[in-house]
Length: 379
Image (cartoon, rainbow, N blue to C red; front, top):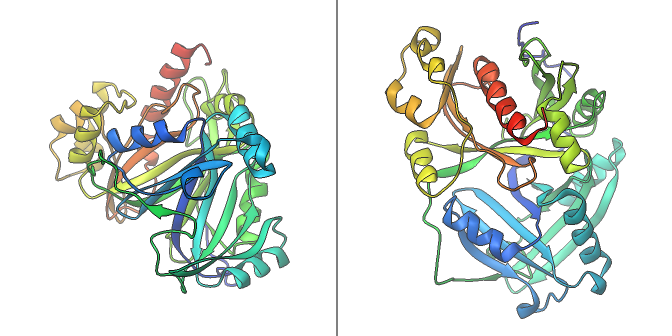
């Protein structure tokens, strides 16, 4: 089946306005060390901190920022001090370092939460007000796949840097940005047979539309395949592809993720740049490892995608993929997993008009992932 854009039903509309991704919170085993990695390798700046030194005894959180991308790295210090800290420690024990919260910036957190609950969302936290000298933030949270949640963050009465409880910091060593601008999309992996369940969740609870659909004929190799549907809100600032495994001769990358993450979760985040060649060159120089692409991929590249601005030999040297749709073309590349468990990784993407997700690159990409799986003994 060819990739298609799903028709938008006349009644489909956002349940509540979403302005964009507010932050992404990771639960990690050692947030201090992880923050240094993201600063030195990915060029994030450490801008705020919450922990024992400023009144939070059971955990530590580091706020990293680059462009409009905000990562919060949280670790439990004393799991015995609170149920929340105990949960953080258990999350890391079960999943390894992973994404807990895909937080959404909304105009009215109380209204957004109420509407989501009315439409069938499960509550994680009712709206609560966080205050300090810079004003107040209203925040609530709902469940999605696995142990992933969506916090709903209202900032209209807050002038501070991030959230009450966080204090600005100016470390001696600060990351130098690599050109990351914003979160383009976040991909979730779910169990076999659960993709449509979560598609229905985002449609029914959030009012999202099915932007694109890929089946096992679109995303397959000799050995494995998967299926995916992309859900998006009305302004397209939030795009959530949902993947599930499909039958194949061997274990798919989705099955490997589910095995090692021990359940559904966020597989990768796509971070946008305006100059992918410069961004990827800098990331490589700083030790970030990317999937390798056979040189044969580039032999027919211009015949397949037409004229592009970037020199093909440079793209081949860096392993950057290119695909075109009716609106333009995109360039993308994928890191190897950023930890020892083969779970979380990143996509670096530059869009030159294209609104799609690189269907023409799927075969080369997934064959590259399978080579990595084979090296790990997991194919």
